[in-house]
Image (cartoon, rainbow, N blue to C red):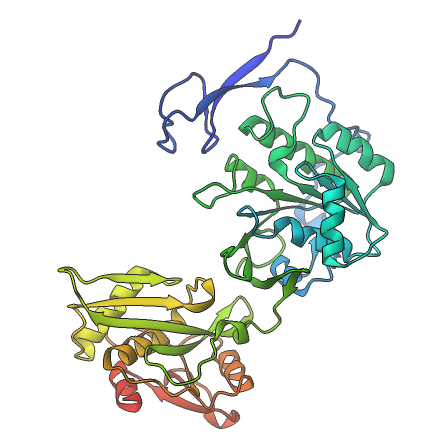
Length: 451
């Protein structure tokens, strides 16, 4: 009788150990190491693959170029993040908090593809629950098939019967294989079931989308190797108390990872936000100090965002520096530049910064809007409603040029802004635009023009 093999795994980070210990040496967590059966000594036959194909060594010059065949998801936001659609034979992992809308998004995609046979596998909901959600979304499709199953061998058997063109798994943490005896959701089960699904996708050319849970730290639950195994890792994020959801690509073997998709959660499902600038800028009845508009880029998409700043006298001994959606260290750097190069005494004041809409921006081109909002709040003078900013601030107080400034200017012009402040080191023709382009070289120039 074959010997059963066991090993010890950390349930937090997935590190394997030869014996039990109280603390994981990799992540430092206590009491997270458990023993799992990794091999019962049986021959694995996850699914019948074609072993008759002979694989030979090829010179890279002799390899024929084959274009990526993609499935159009009929969802512009998802297509943008994926790079044009779902690639045949790929495995995509989408993670997010409970209740954020992962299952709703993938069910909408499955129902929106009338020409693609989709197998929706659910290990968390019954078929009647999925039917109720589909009726709420209000889309009918004859090519969407529901399977409530968690055993991978049975899933492969049903897939060979109907031959789907796309498979959605909701969720990977509920699946289990008969070749691993640990419970569903454990490190061994997630790794083994994912490996079987990847082998199926690569050999049949059927793309698979996996829905995954995340931990309280905001990372996808399971071993880190899970993200290395799949082709695409998407993060679905947002505040459940707000209506907007953001879809980002943390990893994409077939496209860029800098794209952003924005959705609005409604009673009938997720609605694509075609123009994010309109939802990220709040409507005001009267001018308010501390508000500035920045022209930024997410991938190839230009959009305008609103920066809010509040500067007040420090009540306690140490002034507070707080930023939401912006790097706090960069905020401290910009405050030091304003104090050293522009003469503003901000060292004894509390400074709070917020980017509206709940998004996080790493684009250095919003520096100019950040310091404008801070100065506006500090002087209690509202900025004009018709101006926006695009420029990076250096340590010597100079306004540095930013990339693809033409797209930023055109976006501001399209949304009806009259003035945009950019660096004079951007070599552009200001006469080419209907919007007035103000060129500034130092922080002091900006202060003189605005205040």
